[in-house]
Length: 84
Image 1 (cartoon, rainbow, N blue to C red):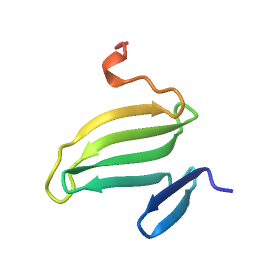
Image 2 (image 1 turned 60 degrees about the vertical axis):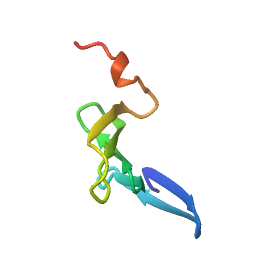
Image 3 (image 1 turned 120 degrees about the vertical axis):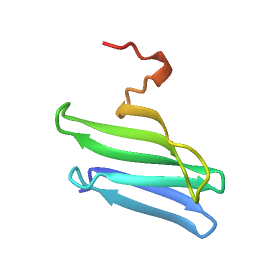
């Protein structure tokens, strides 16, 4: 059984992919103005599933900005986090 599971829907129909704790799962949703990249992975140190969501360039357009990195299901926007 897969640890991570992803789906997408586009003009050519639906597709799905699976990822393991070891492989993780990486996705992109892009336009000519940039992309959003999501990377789901198992954080060995925290013993939890984590995700990193970032804006990223696509075909030379866009910027690199991390929007969120942390446990899946425990979303706290970066601008609301308290530094320890």
